[in-house]
Image 1 (cartoon, rainbow, N blue to C red):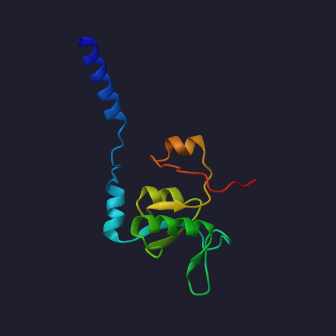
Image 2 (cartoon, rainbow, N blue to C red):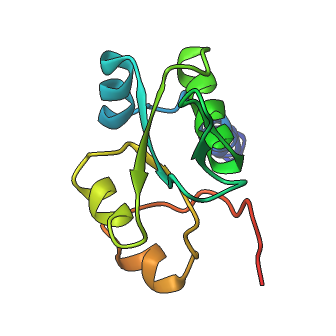
Length: 130
């Protein structure tokens, strides 16, 4: 009988660890929601195909659309994004200082950047180049 109780307790422990729990959004996401816009750092305004404003000043391009997709996820509205032009030199300092919430930018994912740059996360590779 003792053995059956121990097995039942172990099974209950395994089941409790495997049940998904809701993810916590965190303070950064809460601040974005409170502000009402996502500030997205994009390389521009002269990066055709990736991020340039059109003749009406509306940003267009691959990296810009990633920002809009994140805005849809947060606000259910692709227009709730503010595009902040950044350079190769200013992108990481802007992110670290909170001037932008995310970067959708041409940034090479390296081990050094992944492990040393102010706890930034590179969530996915979205473009390969030569």
